[in-house]
Image (cartoon, rainbow, N blue to C red; front, side):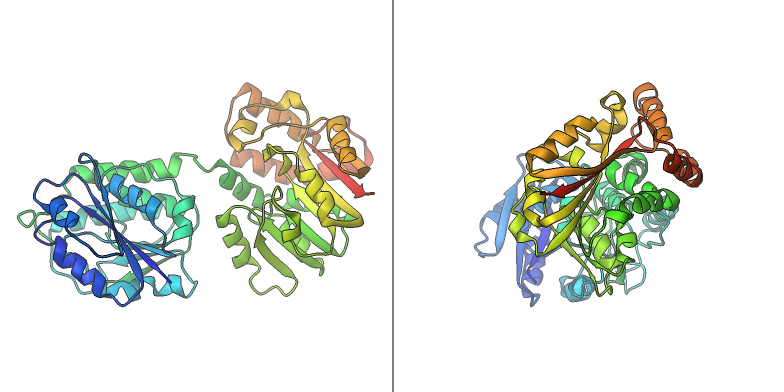
Length: 454
């Protein structure tokens, strides 16, 4: 694997060249991405004289902070694994193999090098105390047992960096990384590392103010709902009765070779996998695919792969006699999906859709979830007909949910489904399922549509 080493630099002329020499000695294929953050002590001039082919130099026009420099370096990284390396010789590059081992083995997405479990120079008690306080807060907020969130040694699979949205410019980047990594449920390992901490006389830059900056980013990561989609899927996954209800409504139409488009984190997928049929699960988000692969890693008849339904349908293996697409169409700008569905399916194959219904319900919940539209019955029928499908079955689903969505999204302007609402709906599901099986309700939160390829 190729390694990308991100090295932020600000006034490190005393240690910079020695650090680069040590990094280059590590016997792993690598690139060094060095970001000079407006140094004034000769560091920038020393960097400009370097001629090694595997060094990429980025120059900030003025001092922007460690976080800004790391974010800039992340965007340029091309290696499969990315490591942050400070330029002050506090950390030892010869420990890279230990740091990346679990990622290389496929067991971890992120690895922290903890300074408190390995050999380390005895350093400032107040820094130690501040770190312990931040760790305690982080572990409480994210229900984990991390020992050293402020470590400067962190290694990542490169895909992780495309799935987190970092914004901190200064030392708060360490806490923000931790907040986003744990809020997205990445697999995190800690390994002991050596540490030679500097004093302020030797050039250490972090101060007591950075404690409060780090605290801010920990709290922001917990309460800022950036990834509403994942949080909604997680809350939906807890609604086991509701998911079972959806599954039972589509079950009579399932064939033998199943393709689920937009599987998410597998709330319905595990029910499909229990049928004893061939199931192909797809999604476009790498974090969802990671969850699916981990969940079905030993299942002999379940395959997981990345696929965009708007891309070439020939990339999927056949034959497919049933496509299940639940709460996906409303996210797509291009309606080419229907023609691709038809191209994938065998003759007389079925397309099973669940889409949000009733345009009058469109509100803040839809906007935050990335819904581009809600559907009318006739609209979905016309789109199916235009792509060589005939409608075998179409009906509304979950009429109380429509009323709740109207209040939450149009009246209260909420941006995420509350846990309480999910719990209530889950408890009510057996009674709703019984009622809707006996009485035809002329409206609902969703439409379930079964189309057959002509």
